[in-house]
Image 1 (cartoon, one colour):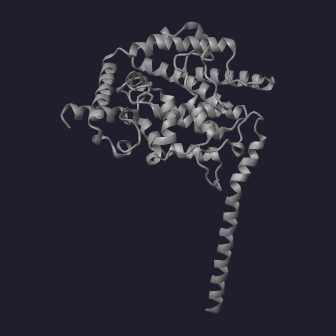
Image 2 (cartoon, one colour):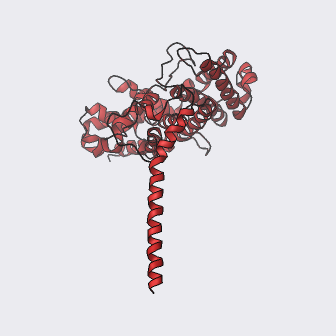
Image 3 (cartoon, one colour):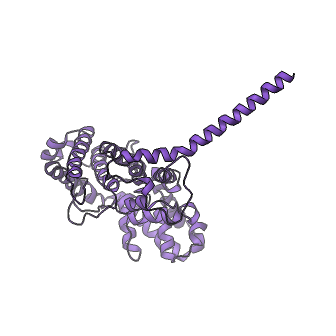
Length: 368
């Protein structure tokens, strides 16, 4: 019996030492990852050199600041809602149409591939990519267009994405992300501007530039597929010169664009220019802009006049007109914010999914 007790005691002591060793290893994990970032490109953003958060926090023992930001975004309510938000086509009947969530994941995958090839900070790239569209409205850019007309001062989804992570998430506390992630989210948007054209906004990190370019690669290609699937265009209508350069399938086009971006950007990074630029070669850039212009002319702009579009616009306008007169019906997290009623209503509507917006509008029409 005594021997058994001694063995149990020794086992407990050994287990305790093992736990202590494991804890010590864990405490060194973040430092080890930060040290490994010294092997990244000199132009890459280093998590240990972040400009920091609005509110200071104790560092994690396991994750760098950029990794923590990525995880906070993934676990946010706004990120979950992306799965029921429209990308381009409203209420599509097929199962394979792109949603705002699948678009976000595609941007993340493309951006990480480019960052890895360029030896940049993949964690920062991923965090920016996953958070870049958190502020998108229901019904895609149609919802954004209507809110921009209604809300005093205008509405832009990139600014709303920043507002989501700064203010609206976690019951008004926000996610308290690092400056680098917040900058990338704010400056990812391009509106109708040509790729690298006049008005192309600056991004504070090279990883933010990667996400900005990856966003275009993702949506141009999946919107072509969705438009063909919806029978809005036919594959043979695509600009022949662009198809010849980029490829005649989704995978070929993405591969061509990503490889070109990597090759051209490496050349720019190694040239010693004062401002490194994630870019494309002139011929591929022209082809990508031609394909993008084709989508605006044949898909994006015509979609603003369809039956589903009119329904979406009426829905947003009804919600915006109703809630200022019925402020008490706003969810508590919006109703008690110290903001104007227009700001509260805009935040509420922008956070809705397509189906939720339609359901609330139907309830309003039916007298609740």
